[in-house]
Length: 287
Image (cartoon, rainbow, N blue to C red; front, top):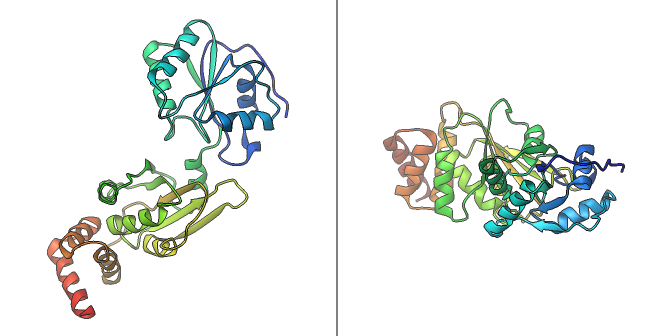
């Protein structure tokens, strides 16, 4: 692919790179990667591979690693380079920089130092998933990655329950089953959702259904690849008996009756007494 090598103005350019298909990169992004005096990346191997695919030579440049474990000195080095009149291009491992990405520290340091920043925008897993998921897109809330532990994850989900927007999460394929189960408990088993996997790649897959239905699908299945989970907004109609019992059954399978009643009552904004009576009735039926 053709690119134009040019002299860039001193500053930092955040470069959007493909989330899967290498040809999704923009021509401007190629120009910036070919022209920047200094290259930095969350994953140096991924950026080097992308540049090789598009025939962009390093020309003596090395790619500086900037990730979650980088020391502050790396950011300071890049800021100092701009002060000396050089141009810096930063790319995340995939998608747009700074979206659940360590490039935020570089952006903040640049702002504090008063140096110029710009962006060569590109693909975004968040926006791609919203386009394909089939849920409302007029308002959405990006929640990134949820905590690893079950209790912290449930608390985080419960805090998002009443947001009147489509919820967007990044999730690990190893944890998606547990995440969906906890989401069904905290947000309501009947809430619509979509699991978007391997976006723009060969095995792209979109699964749509209720949180409880998707949780059942991924209870034993172990998917591969990058995953974005969408959950419909929290403006569901009044909960009917079937939905309430479904939420209670999912919660009771994971926790004590007291905790399950508290969780479901909060999730559906129902009086605790009503949910407790429903839980007792379920226990009698199973007894």
